[in-house]
Amino acid sequence: MTRRIAFVVFPGFQLLDAAGPIAAFEIAGRFQPGSYEIAVLAPQAGAVASSSGVRMAAESLDSAPIDTIVVSGGDGTRVLPDLKAAIAWLRRAAPAARRVTSVCSGAYLLAEAGLLDGRRATTHWGRSDDFARRYPGVRLEADRIFVRDGEVWTSAGITAGIDLALALIEDDLGAKVARAAAQQLVVHQRRPGGQSQFSALLDTGGVHGRFADLMDWVRERLPEPLSVERLADRAAMSPRHFARAFTAETGVTPAKAVERLRLEAARLRIETTREPIDLVAEAAGFGDPERMRRAFLRAFGQPPQALRRAARA
Image 1 (cartoon, helix red, strand yellow):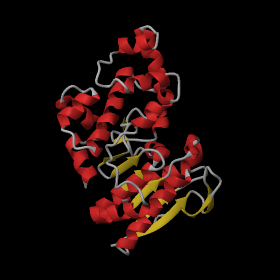
Image 2 (cartoon, rainbow, N blue to C red; image 1 turned 60 degrees about the horizontal axis):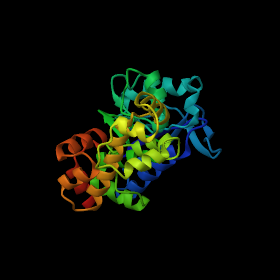
Image 3 (tube, rainbow, N blue to C red; image 1 turned 135 degrees about the horizontal axis):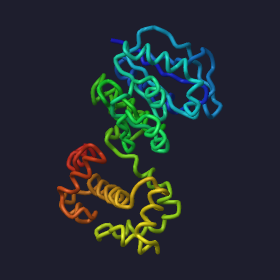
Image 4 (cartoon, rainbow, N blue to C red; image 1 turned 90 degrees about the vertical axis):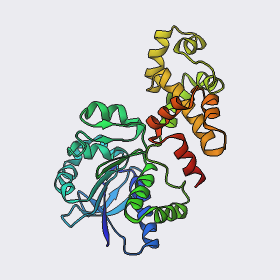
């Protein structure tokens, strides 16, 4: 069975949002010929300029049967009134498609079309606050690499589109083909959809900004108690002022930032060592394995043991 995968682009789209997943589907088709037919669609047929200026040839939005719709993101989504034709087309075409997906800020188009109402979704972390304000009816999971809610899939920024495509390929053709495609692409073997974007989130104001030194200090003391009061004292600020300033700068509370740093440290140990789970929990500052397990489920959608098995595989 040949599945028609339609990529929706528009002026100012992010080139890799389309090109990365297209390459993944194309390579998967080498391992199982005839699996995919790839189409690039746009509100107006012709050469569509991406945000980089590089153009991609596209056909006009049509009514031909589509298995999977993949909506690209990019700077063009900042001016949604210019995308009325694409949004209207999505409203018409989505009910007939087996799957509807988006990469990065392409989630804005799905939300504008009403396709994410009441659903879980994600988008690029840099747009998550704005997205949450605009679409309160969407259950935004801002940390996730990709989210599947029924047959509607959304993914985080840019390279996460490749993760999304590999997950779609696995859904269609099985893990063996998805793994072979990932190896051919020379990417990490399909990151779990539950993996978090929080490294990037903490980079904003955390690694390179006002609280960079504090975050480095925290990383060196993860097994220790790290209360807001202790962090505020280190930053030479009152606890209340520190909590407000830190949240405004980084987009997360101090407690959430500490948990995320602990998660990163624990995940690295889980995936690269054979240390017992309880020792990893202690070294990362969680105190006990159950507390760490709950944190892993919230952030990654999987317990530590599952990530360790995936890393070994």
